[in-house]
Image (tube, rainbow, N blue to C red; front, side, top):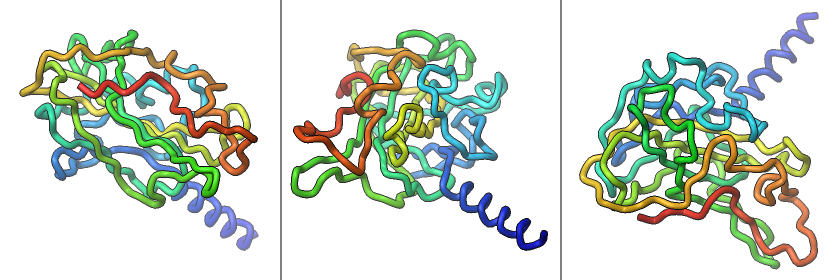
Length: 235
């Protein structure tokens, strides 16, 4: 019995370290404390992913209605480098992206980001060549960084960072979504008009070619990885 219990503990530890959350916002190289500006997610203990793109969890994966009010709002200058730090090494191969949505009436409101208001500002896609196959963003990283477009209008926003882990994505519902939403106030911005905009849920379909994909075997004539969601607004 002791041997079985020890085996279960090892298995549980392995599963926990294989998954992760994004509790830390990075602004110009400075990393916040856990959940200081990021809404605490439902998986903050289990660290398990979202797998249903049609669930409300695909938006920000909040723990509950207090996640927004418990987190602060960080001031970010447009054009700054920002990012998210993971709770564990991100060992799964996949696709990264970041979205913004204007936050009405405020970034710490539960009503923020409920409409068709999200726009993509960055993505990091797998590469493809017939000789080398699919190549994925650097393995075993602990953070990812990107730039807030300089022409983003001033105001409060939700900043959504995401990795879609694709190691099990060969069957529908197998892709794993790791998500964090930071609450920010953008200053020093411009007068851009971010487009196109999408909603969460709504931006993705479970059969999108970038979500339902066997990364280990590609069919004849494979065109390369097709990123899900809208095109990137570069601002």
